[in-house]
Amino acid sequence: MSRTPTTRQALPDPGAPMGHFVSDAPFDPYEAEKSGSALEKFAQASQMQLMWWQFRQHRIAYYCGIFLLLMYATIFVSEFLAPYNQHSRNTDFIYAPPQAIHLFHDGGFVGPFVYGRTQTLNMETLQRVYADNVEEVQPLRFLCRGDEYDFWGLIPGNLHLECPATDGQFFLLGTDRLGRDVLSRIIYGARISLTIGILGVTMSFILGIVIGGLAGYHGGWFDALTQRVIEVLQSIPSIPLWMALAAIIPVTWSPILVYIGITVILGLLDWTGLARAVRSKLLALREEDYVLAARLMGAGSGRIIGRHMIPGFMSHLIASATLTIPAMILGETALSFLGIGLRPPISSWGILLTEARSVNIVALYPWLMLPVVPVILVILAFNFLGDGLRDAADPYK
Image 1 (cartoon, rainbow, N blue to C red):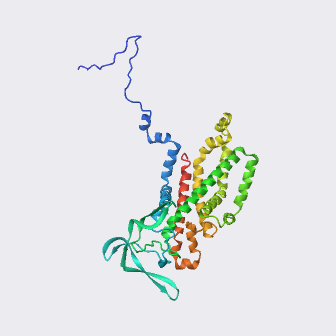
Image 2 (cartoon, helix red, strand yellow; image 1 turned 180 degrees about the vertical axis):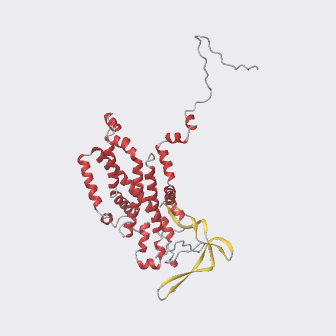
Image 3 (cartoon, one colour; image 1 turned 120 degrees about the vertical axis):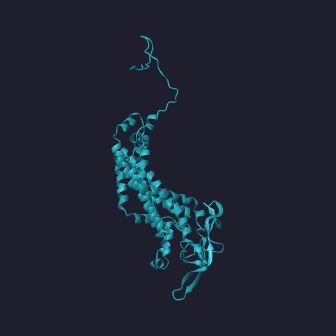
């Protein structure tokens, strides 16, 4: 039985150079990573990627983040989303209850519509009584022309997402004592209530990082003074302190100046917790080798704190700031509800709740309490988002 000889590459002669092969294929330095396992992908991921993967595992926080993004997106187009101008009065429909949206009438599909309203006066209680007129069908209009408004106070317009029928009414959440649409005022009020939390946290974030960073890095008399100031501020109840500072705002100020003043007050009184967190972290980091190396290379205090120490725990600071925004929103709501915060003609959720101060008003017109619903939803969403960010801030645990 014969064996087929195998072909072997001939060896070079003694002293002759070895032959070599050079591939013409382009070099891909990430080829090994692409063919690696999921564990290798995890090991080679950046910290931001790890934080994002960890955050997506927290499903409640993930969906709450999407909800908050949608809420903040609406403040840019509040005039377009609201069916009425926030100051439009319908004097024939004062304290009108919410209207229901229907799709079918007399067994046939009509599309979104509301029934007309008839009004009578109860002579015993002198209360307006509204009833649906099922014979009057008022189809809703979409992408329509309605009440005039100034977009962001600059551009005149009258385009709305939805409008009532011509010579009709559409009060999805009812009206207040002046016949103003509650839904439209809630949409307009979101612009103030949501932005005042962001601006206030931004101010407290800057103050907390600067003051806490200097106190933790340098220590000494500045650290002792900072701690005493923080202890004094935290020992005073928040609501009375807010009330005292808000009371000094002149009544002659314009609504914009009052808005800025309330934002400054909320920001100035909420930096203490963040400053303490930054101080305690920098006290531990200032003895690290990389901080000593930066100091020996001639880096100043600002560069060491801002470029080397703060980025190491910035994710924790962002999570802490996210949990602080609800306190800012509740602070503005409380001050406006008590009548010492923002004042009309500005619309905020706190101002809308002032319509429901009396128990009798709430008993007779319960829909005036509806502005508390977006407050609760936003506060819960921020709390869940903060929990998710706090868990994702340390993806290596």
